[in-house]
Length: 340
Image 1 (cartoon, helix red, strand yellow):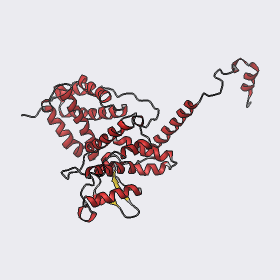
Image 2: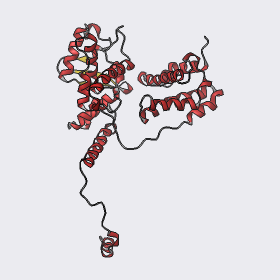
Image 3: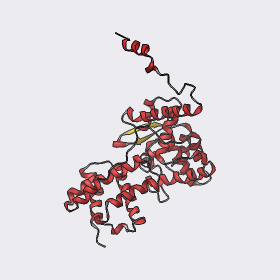
Image 4: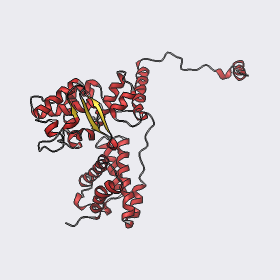
């Protein structure tokens, strides 16, 4: 079958333009790729268009808007996530308008799709420590796969790592000897060393021994891998988490009121540290934020939660009807003359 024009342009964009001319990192390219993977699945399932037959003519504004709506309604994505997906689509059509001028009108129609407005209020989706414990209690540690899954989940929470950082860990990045640490490769290929708590260190030590992994002989091998010995993908990590979240939700429905993604695990670690008095600077270093202002979102979210808790705890005894100061001429004159 002859490749369609959309297949050609998308392949050139992801395979040559982004890594070559744009110079984007592998993790950023994977994020763009994930957006188009979801779009192709939507075209197949909702529009009945097989991925191998999709052409540029099929990609209309109505189709993209339907896709964005499905992210919210079917996948429960936040406005921020939907806007990230739309930004990836915009970037592709910005590229396409110079590569295929005959598609200029279509590209302009795509670029005219607006982002979802978000409020300035800080809100960080996270789960409680009890919910994390419920998830970690689900893997069957009598099975090899269960022990591997527990190690992955504990490592994700303990380090507050991004899912892309977890899949990028090699055996040589793990230090079991005191002080136990792990090296993570974050955004912009910036490496950071993260300390491991004793329980996670012990899990990793047993995992490495059971899998026959050693930094000397298997240093470049991925730390977490599938049954074929291949590096576990971000989707694979998400699948592992989803499986145990679903099992824990059945037993403890009150603990899970939001969709728990790998990034929610990361948010949860940061919020738990903050609530236990850990300085924002240390949380910034753990999460690998380039600027402390990025980490401050957790502090703002924590302050808002405290305010809501105080407001809902009891009725404020202060009078709701304010005294009519404006009717007190003497007081108003006194205020006006104050400081003269």
